Length: 436
Ligand code: SAH
Image (cartoon, rainbow, N blue to C red; front, top):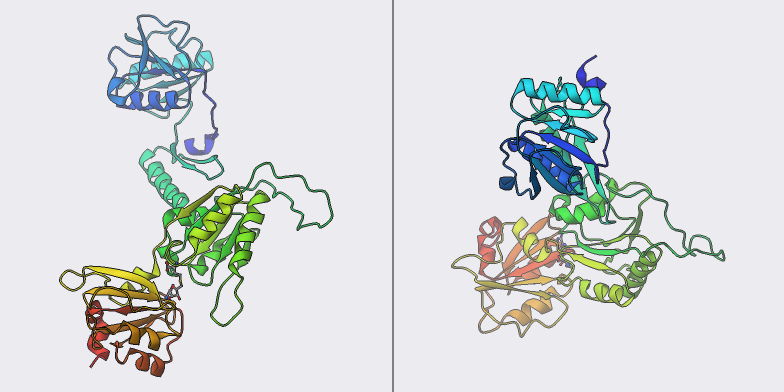
């Protein structure tokens, strides 16, 4: 049997307990620091120690061990190691750089039945320090990942880093598994205990639809939610990765179809949070860009529910980019405005060098194009309609304010689509292929 197979992994509560670190080099100092952070009483034994360089405050410098330092404090016994220095310890780390000294510490520890980590030669000690990553959770807890990989600590670190990255990105199931609180909706007429705490709400911008275009924080929150309330637009593919007991509520709005009205969405957010569930409201693009994020934020606050807005990649910028249209470009456009295609667009300032981005504009494209053609923005200003950015139906139709409505109609353009008006449209490959 190899050493690795004989290891018995364990988490230690060292707070308030004496741990001895023998040695004063960087390895010893790093160990001392993690032990202080974990609340241990730490005794460092070494003639020279780089404690200050590692930001470790030393409470006392002594010639002989005392009754021991206080919790989260370091006592520095400033001399070479002697048998007896381990008295009262629960755990020992030795990293002296000298094999005979490390062996002596390890032998003393063995006799005193104290577990001993030996930095130089793992086969000498009786305990190993794993590579560790800590991921804080929304419910105040944390997930601790500890990896050992035989005698190859670098391999352990590499694996730890990979797992940590996955945890942070939300690719792994971070969701808590405590039982869900009951609500009156589950069993009408029964007595219901109030939840131990209110749930919280995150208004998460999901980006334009591609699962890679949500933020890492958004993805991580999604992996921790009890309830996900989702729009039609946004990264719906991610819903398939949720565990089966996550409740997914689709309030998708399709133009023409019956969407869930906004006041009912608001009520859902509050109802689930009040029942103690953590809710992710997964929205398309960015919550604050024509997304009613402000209203949802306000109703949650008014109901006394903690709520956070997590920004997203707005379709106003990303969907044009998907077909090679930058909303600003040096020498072509210095700024851009985002508007809805529903409202009268006549008062928008600027000429072809100020890019206009219209959301929700397909059905009234003809009206909008006509209104947008002004003295400053002539009818030959380039325009593009980008359908289903990052989706299977992604397509761009280009023209000018004078003919874009006609071209879009001929192409059978359908929502969702982003309309771009301005000289930046000329930068799209589609302009070269279609325009003339
Ligand atoms: N908050 C969202 C916008 C909501 S309004 C954001 O920041 O992106 C909905 C409009 O966004 C749609 O009518 C369409 O104009 C646009 N839209 C969103 N995702 C889109 C996509 N993948 N492709 C094309 N248009 C999209």
